[in-house]
Each structure stands twice: as structure tokens, then as C-alpha cells.
Image 1: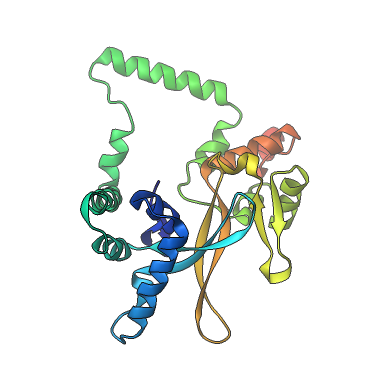
Image 2: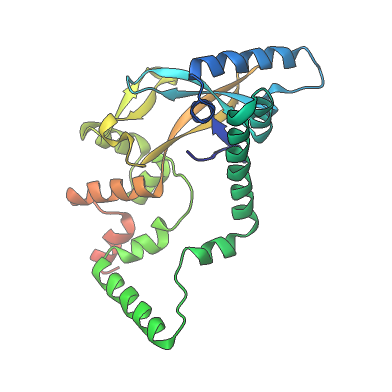
Length: 255
């Protein structure tokens, strides 16, 4: 279970919250709808500061509703709980949100925790030798990874496709032809979904984004984006077909 990012805000998916508090998701959804209805009676309350409508793709590839809970939303749910479950849920969500706050506030300190710090000259020399050996094994991909793979965050298909001089449509069609993703819906409602055999690999995430409907009301759509692991998967898949990023193509031509 992890925090998601929605328009710069940290949120939890209602399915994860339901699991944390030991309640069926449909029952938590029912409760949240009741909370929202109660809030809408007050002009001073904005339910979207607590609960944000969203969707997810089920194991049966159905698009189903869910909610994204902000920290305030988690506090609201926690206040409705009593006893051990309420205490455990409060401790879990507080730890998650505080951990995210610490990472944002102290990025350098968090980065240092991820890398070994040599304590002697011998350890420093061994680390340098190991790194040099790894770089040698990764050629000729290392230049591409240095400039692209270390970029943090999620990427759209369009962004990845540009690395190869392709359009998003061409890359989506390629991934579809090779049974990585498939379309659901049509026209403006068309969306791409990753096949189940890749669903638990950590290649993609559905990032919700807010849009305004014709009637002026807000709606939520989920956009399939690729993690850095997913980007590497695409890179390796295309490499199997001798398709390389533009930067590598220039290197191979001696440019």
C-alpha cells in the first residue's frame, strides 16, 4: 500500500483504506457517499478536500468507481471508527503521510539513506571498482539511461514514444500488437489498459486528473502512465526488435 499523487496532493485509494480498516470496499463507498451528501448541505464545506471521485480497472477489466482520500478524508474516516481498528488505521495513515512529508522536506537526506557510504579507503575503492564494472557491462545503453532512465516520476506514452521518434499512436499500436496493452471503449472514452500478466509488474499506474464537464461540474479521468520500470520494459522490448532510441541511433551512426 502506498500514497498516490493527485494534483500535487498525497491521497490513498479507498480500496486500500477498506483493507486497512477491515471493511468491504462497497460498504466504505456507501459510507463515503453518505459523508459527501452531508457535507454538500453546508456551503462552507468542500467534499473534494476530503474525498475525490476516481475509477480503477478490476481483474475482470471492468472500470469501477472508487475514491481518493486526502489526509483530511482519512481523518474523517478514522473519527468514525472505534476501538483497535480505529487506532491501527490512524497510526498507519499518519505514518504514511508523515513519511511522504519527510521525503519532500529532506530529499538529500532520503537519497543518502539509499546509497552505501564507505567508511575506509578500501571500501571506497571497492565501491568505485564495482560501479566502473557495472558501467562497462551496460554499454552502449549507459548514455541513454543517464539522460533518460534517471528522470523521476511517471511518463506518458507520448513522452516515451518521442525518445524513438515515434508518435504515441505508433507506440500504442506496437504494444497492442505485442499483447502488452489493449483498448477499452472507443472515441473520446477510449483508454488503454495493460494486460493482466503485466499488471503486477509495477510497469504502469493510473494517474487521475481533473476535468470540467460541459455542465460545469468536475469529473475525474484516469490516464495510463508508465513508471521508470515500465519505461525500461518498453525499451528492452523494442530493442528485441532492433528498435533503438534516437540518441542510440546517432551513436551507432557515429554522429
